[in-house]
Amino acid sequence: MVLFKVSLIGVLFASISFCSYQTHTLNLLISLEAVMLCLLLFSFSISTMFGMSSHLFLVLLTFAACEAALGLSLLVSMLRLRGNDLVTALSSLSF
Image 1 (spheres, rainbow, N blue to C red):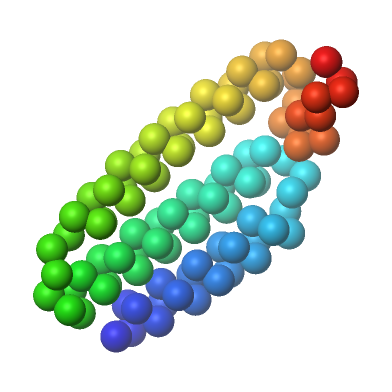
Image 2: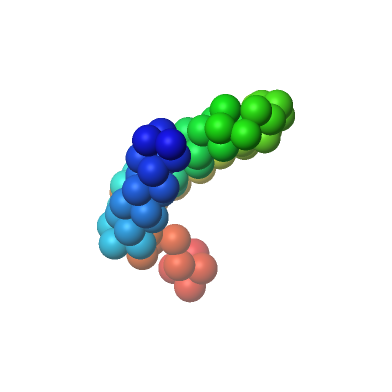
């Protein structure tokens, strides 16, 4: 039950940090990864509390790994193209 409460508080704080730090892309990616890790913790706590299988945990773990790889590759290509990781540089009008 403690793990469940900790994961919910973690999702709340990670979501708040995702909404408040929107200047750099790296900050957004780190906050998004924190949300995914807290959701992994949440799904693990639910599956252990109710004695369910851990299929949802494995699916979320796969999505988290794919999201991290895709986010980092986009960040690297944006840094090569623009020279900075500011979110305001992603505007389609600046091409």
